[in-house]
Image (cartoon, rainbow, N blue to C red):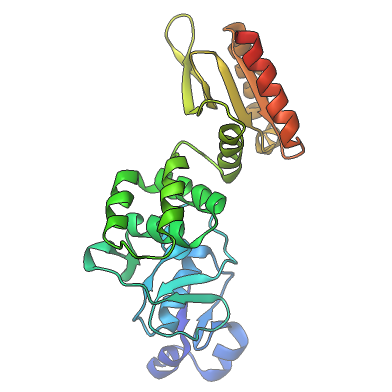
Length: 277
């Protein structure tokens, strides 16, 4: 059947009998069934069905429906709904929401990207909120000033102080949560805020490379190496040639992996900056 569905509706319509429903499908929430593993998007849909189609899909679930990457399939679905006792795997919130903060996706009411960013900023710890909104902004072309304006609509809302701190740090140029982590580490270490996704041109003005983040005027870059490119020999070879070309143009690239201690990363950046003084 593909999408999540209500078991009671499938039985009433005659699409399934009770034996088939029990043996071939999995109940993820009361009366809500699936025939395959859930994604973040299908979990959001399943939670909405559990609400009897009354809730508004919010938070990380809304982000998933806006095609934001990095939303975990096993994270609880989030809804704005008046039921305070949801089943395991669903979080409900009774926050006020206006009609202009809701969009429709696949027939379901979903918080707009702006409202989604506000909710995430209010509810999540600082760094997690920055990473989530970085990804949301990259997926939806979210304008951060719009989030600031929406926050002004709810002056007494809990978490607004965190939202303001988040908005000072977000950057849609991050292509992964680890790039967000690296950028925040750099800022907190006292370096100037790096520019993200820097296009580098060769001596003829042809754009040939992009650096995750850095300082173009100093020709210093910082990149998080998740190791994915090493799986593909062609991509790995191109990356080696790219780094050689950047070095020939005078760029210093600080490559970072998950094994690198924070102090070591900062020391390497300090040495790179010292070479430019």
